[in-house]
Amino acid sequence: MKRADERRAAFRMDVVTKAVCYLKAEGVMISGPIRDISIAGLYVETHERPELGSVFEVEIVLSGKHSQMILGSMTGEVVRSDDSGLAITFDQRFEWFAMVPLYFNTSLDLSTSS
Image 1: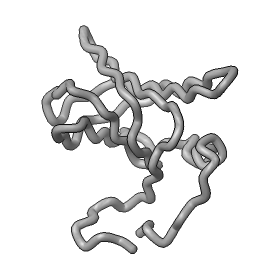
Image 2: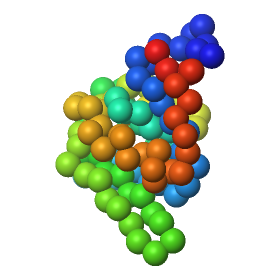
Image 3: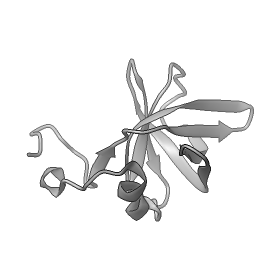
Image 4: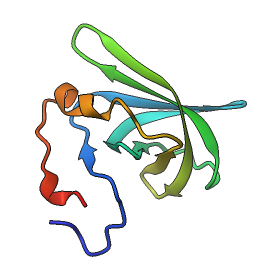
């Protein structure tokens, strides 16, 4: 069920395995575990607090037992921060999002999507 205060247009999926996001800008590198991800953006847990509107190169590293998959060449903007981390909106839709349920071995519960 969608929460009344929910403003997201895209379905998001909680991350249940090791996935790390690296945010890179001139002279700045922020990294942390990904809490959730959607086709439109992600939430990364970090103590860093860049300014809202800051633009970063986004790299996602998915770690398996014996290998890693690195997804890069994306950019995103900081749209929200709180005590736990940052919300990043991708500049372009995350075209590899269809693979996320396969990697995280979860099923999509579309009852929470808009």
